[in-house]
Length: 355
Image (cartoon, rainbow, N blue to C red; front, side, top):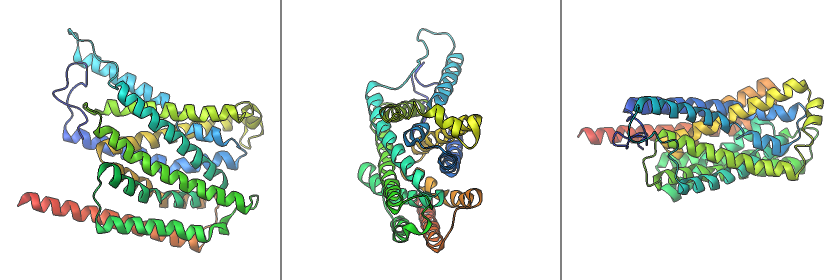
């Protein structure tokens, strides 16, 4: 996908980007996505472990960092204006059309619902369990990528999908094994199925974003990608703010802060950290989709599952029983299968091209 175009009119995209620049952008977004995938669940769980009870609050925080994207867009605009210099046409402030704005708004509302489902699941489940369940997102991403953007499957990718689903199934069979002592079995299973729902929904959102790029009817520059991400995050946050208002969570925040185990300052720091880390996740996710594919984004999200698993066990002293070990092995097996398939495909394509 083209990030910038040398033929873009003045004020509508700036200078063209080389392949090396595109690779750098892909690496940067992979780092952002990796940071968000590994640390996001841990920070979100910390909120609940230290006395936080607002599910809508935690869901809204996942996309509340969208103003940071606005700062980046402002810097991009100032750079383009300085680079273009004086001329008959002013530097364009924004590239997003009303058509893309509406599409981004719908995707944002779906993301907001996904955030709520995920936050609800994390409020009941240990991080290690919720992370393993989220690994099944790759399977749903693969299915929706096939349906929406005609993603091609190989025997290796099908094997990866099967193994990831099997790993989530092992957790479902032994679901109550790591149930926190202060929760009922009903709450635990509700958390389990809401997390599965979050995996299904975001597995749909990623290919839908890729489909939106392909139907954009304009050059999809990286600036445009960030504008769409800001719109998605804004509407996702708005969705959860409405939920906060209807469930009176905003009014309870001062009391929650005063009773928070880490104190009021600690409460604010956890909220800010949550917003920052999760914005890294979402910016990285859409960036990888724009530079690569939705399936690659899903694979990277699932790849950092072992990191989150290990950190959760050491930081929060969560139990790590046999069923989690089996699910973890199946997940890693699935990741290896997928990447080996991609390696074989790339090697075959290179060999064919050289001939």
